[in-house]
Image (cartoon, rainbow, N blue to C red; front, top):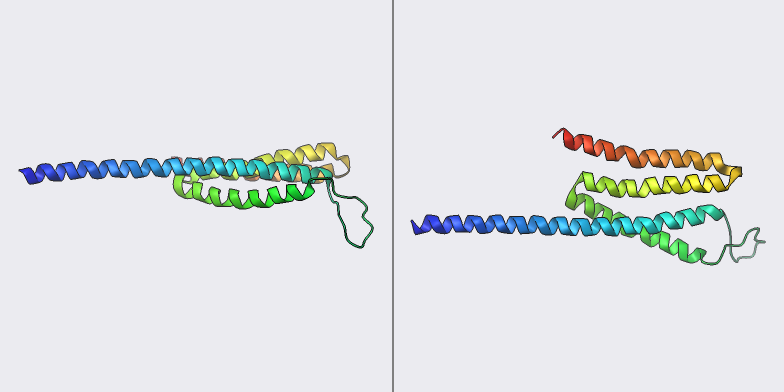
Length: 156
């Protein structure tokens, strides 16, 4: 008799431990989601600003037609760091929380970039068609996985 009561107590403890591990996993997953979305915000801002002033150059032996504005180096650094932080935390989000939440990171990359490209195209009439096409493609690439991940989860 005492043995079965002890076994039941052990079972309840195991369930609590599993619940605690599941909660910790979700907490870490949501923290990764926040980090990923924050990094994507930095990435989207850097791409928008860099795309809005186009090509430029600084230094070197050649005549520079268009010098780079102040802060271009910092924007490129923000872009590179944001890419790797968003990639790592996005993969962690996907692994810890699953496809539904991971697809938010994917959409957080492509939809704001598409909106940014549309804004750049609006400001630059000479190359507006290129930016509008990029915009449409990026928005579609960001939105479609949101629906497909939802449909695949609904079919389970």
